[in-house]
Image (cartoon, rainbow, N blue to C red; front, side):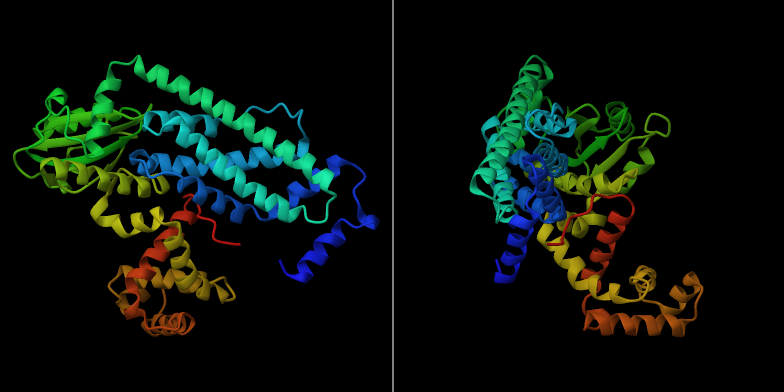
Amino acid sequence: MSKLKGERIRARHSDNSRPSSLQEVRAGLAERLRTRRPEIERAVFAHARAVSDLPGSEDAEYVVGLRAAVAAALDYTLTGIERGEQWPEPIPSVVVAQAHRAARNGVDLETVLLRCAAGQRVLVGFLIVEADGLPSRTLAEVLDLQGLLVERLMASVSMEHKRELKRARRSPAQRHAELVQRLLAGENLGLAELGYHFDAWHIGLIATGKGATETLRVIAASADRQLLSVSHGEETVWAWLGGTRRLAVGDLERLMPLEKGRGVSLAIGEPGSGIDGWRLTHHQAQAALLVALHRPRRLTRYAEDMLLAIALRDETLACSLKEIFLSPLRSQRDGGATLLQTLRVYLANGCNASKAGTLLGVTRHTVENRIKTAEQHLGRALDTCQVELQVALRLDELEGSGGQPQPCDD
């Protein structure tokens, strides 16, 4: 911490400006932490996710759910610090849902609690920095309160995780799901028990929405394919279509039933053969699902969104792409809106300035001038960074259309 910053913080807590009560101290501290919320959330999420590399931790819904749970738990803790020990609010439903999801995904309770503890350590670090200058006794009281709030969270998470495991073990389908999880993790046990032919061509799908199971059955019957499916929550189904011949992914959208498939979305991997291909096509469907969760649509195909999926999975990459290829353009008076829109249309139309101009309602010369301006701000020719720029623009579109933003600000 710089000397100047330390002096400013101490000045906030000098005798002349000292709050009149512990409640005011807590409220002020919570407010300062909220100003750093994107930075704190990013750090907590990174440390929590780094605790373990279990197979379930890369499930797209689990990863998105973990981020949402981190955000909700952070809000809960900051509000608790502000309002005090007697604050009666129950833990957020998003956190409960993630505890259930962890149990279903095979993420053991120890890992879940270690992730909670990792997040607590990160928050304590930020809290101590923002509390610099407070009397040590006051800081100790605030830390005790923060610890109590995290204990409440961990106790509830533990209870909900155990409850979901107990419920799942009573279900006959759980044995089926456990065998699939073990196969995905690399084991080759229980192949015959699943009643599915693995020595074949496979396409992995993840269906979400009401009627997902029935939609998959209709598709499998229409395509004359064997279906292996596993329920993964109330409205999510992991599935594979198997057969002796390779099935084109493009046929699946045609085969989706119009009525029964209404409200159902499919994330689809690419065809793969044998047990290794069975695993790979599922992992590809998971990557496609990560895109679909940010931008819901009827069908999301891995081959069309693989680079975007990689960027969504790697927060450092996503933030870097936006910082390198979008931030320089936002210095324009309109926040870069004109340049960004021109680049989207220009790149989507094969870098044809005339066609882009027609679609934008401007001349070819205007488009070319805008492209030159963008290149000047980027410090590089467009043809040297088209792929990176397109991915950055698509990330920006996801956030603008209601997708979950990835906080990059410190």
